[in-house]
Length: 407
Image 1 (cartoon, one colour):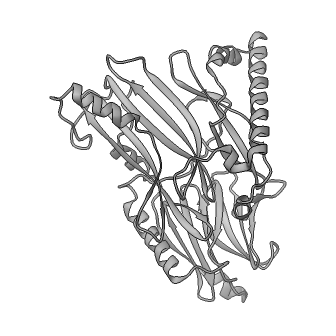
Image 2 (cartoon, rainbow, N blue to C red; image 1 turned 180 degrees about the horizontal axis):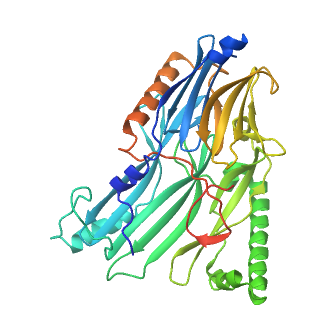
Image 3 (spheres, one colour; image 1 turned 120 degrees about the horizontal axis):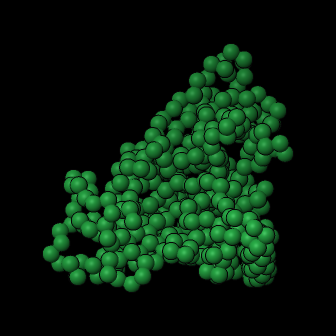
């Protein structure tokens, strides 16, 4: 088994997108005699957040590898931390998910599994003479006999709630059988409290959607078994692991379908050799809870032909058009209505996630200073610390763990 990415190595990998401050040219406005509409917002796309300011002085666009969300006018940064240790024949790497309200210094632990650090303490007591090594300075084996690690991946953020998936891997030389487990959960970014379905959508909707998910799983399993019996090769392979899947009503996330809330269950299972697998059930729409009202306006609305996505504001519209390969979005600001004059903002990596307005109501000087400071720090530390970001990869219903946002 290969050595997982160490805390330092994972930090370097996380620096794939370089932050930059950009100033958009205003020649289009001058040549056409059009006035740029006053606007200010945060736009999340790809691995970055873009801070856009428009008005009489022109347009300014700044980007940083930072993940933000807003709750009742309070803006929170979400970030990952790492811990662990490397030895010549053992590797321990643990992830922690944190949030910080931008106008406060203290951070809140949103999620962290203690298993890795517990196993590290046990291993150190059993190997008191082994010296820890620095993977950046010393050559270490690529295939240690003991590997204990966990990973956290952000699936989605909707206002006060963040959906994540956690993967735990334990392979201890001479220890118990190896263990590989995955789970999906929703956490409150303000407190770190794990959110139940009852809290998120109400008891009645929680019972309804759980029953619907159980029925969906049963139908999916029956379909796979039927296809396998009919000679479908992929289904035949899948049937070997079907008995390992057990519905867990706590393994779910919040997603959105056409700006409406939905619940997506992940059913954990295991392959023949113990690797973690997951069945991703189709998202189930739910009645909009009260907290969803403020979330809805931040979400993109696609046209029927999927050629444009828009966010409608009172005095302007933000729109994005995907490139032919779908990898990039051309972001524009439109004055007045969706058919008004367009000003290019930037070309950004797809997909687009959310737009957080900063002009209704306008942010005050303290909030602006805190946001600027957060952008500065995120840009300065890119490549030194691991940033939190959305992941977006198509998710087949049965697969080895490759955690992703629901399409």
